[in-house]
Image (cartoon, rainbow, N blue to C red; front, side):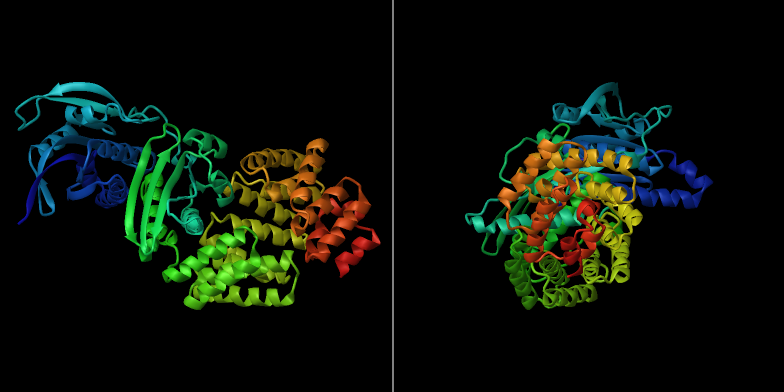
Length: 602
């Protein structure tokens, strides 16, 4: 029998009124007991604690230090008060205890138990030894309650209450609906601490995988990669980032990759006071990267949401593969984001060669080929390959939203709209937080002229990704096509505010400059509109997407000749989405021109 004497923070929790409830409604009492376990245990783990045992409706846990125990207790009470449906008493003491096998003994345990017993419902009471260790910690406020002679304790104990932030134990005060208290997070690109700058792709890829995992969860707003990565290489403080992106928390860290060894450090920070909610360091083999990503996502989500159901734990788990295939996949995705499409295709194909059952690589390859088809050539062979790979991704991972989104994108380009609708609908069922599913579904509806439905999908996309300007401006475009010009202009103004914010983060963003310039023109901001469009054409004179937006811009401003010339150039470079421009109201001024009709009919 092994035992050790250690200094530890001991926390006791107890459900208020449980014995009476057990006598009145046994089933309800058991349900609350189960919910209490599900609520507390993940939070205790997040704050480096250990659940020792359950004592009836009580729970005994230990922590390596006082501050972690108090932070955990605060989070537990916050969740319990907002969503638990019952009240807890919590008592904490820091003292020397004896750990023996899976149990703990000593005066420290007894004192924590007695402090819990005298605490008021919904509160956290702590001993002076805890108070002395946490009195200067950010986010922890206390007040002295009394000096108490506790049962079986020789000396009186000075007891303090931890004041819960933005809450109260007074039942007469109405507490906010937990759904109205938004959790939001930005995952900043992990810093590359390796000697090799080419390892950036790995750091960026791991960051994006964490973003994708967290984005699966409802009631958690996750900032998109584009906005999060605009801070790469910069050194703004926490509050500047929080203000720029309107988030409550941020995740930052670093990666050191050397051969087959990985060191990842991570910290979750509350924006309001820069306090650390959770941190960890992983020194592992490279092949452990998937378990590390899963662990980070689960701990972050638990710290923000309180606890995760088994279903939520399942949906944030990303597909695994062999390490070499994963590295090629990450390289392919980085190249895709930079629009080096041919090079990206090669990386995805190498990943598939190493693992013929890696669904994400097939989906990535299908997306790249679809993009290549839509914007850079419209070769039927590219669409055929995209079709084949999207189908393979779907066969391998039918429960992965990305598989259905890739498939829906391909089917839209092939003008098989009914089938595309089924795929987007299934993607949304699997992940109701998927921006891409709503956004691409909205584009598919727009291409068919289904403007009401298109506007609805773009609205849902903008609700999922609040910082996004594209979905807002496209919704306005759909409403304008429906003749709702006044409503459209109000929405355009909202979209322009978001576009300006994005341009501050990335002054050379081709999409913002070219796409939002037409919206500026629409609301009478001509000088700014021309400044944005001219900058886009100077920076990206060969980009088909920029050219299409420029053509719509000049058509909207009545410069028919210039609009048609640019449109013809765009088509010559591979663009050919005739369905889209057929319904785009920006082209109304040239719609009856023979040159426009020729392009639509080619």
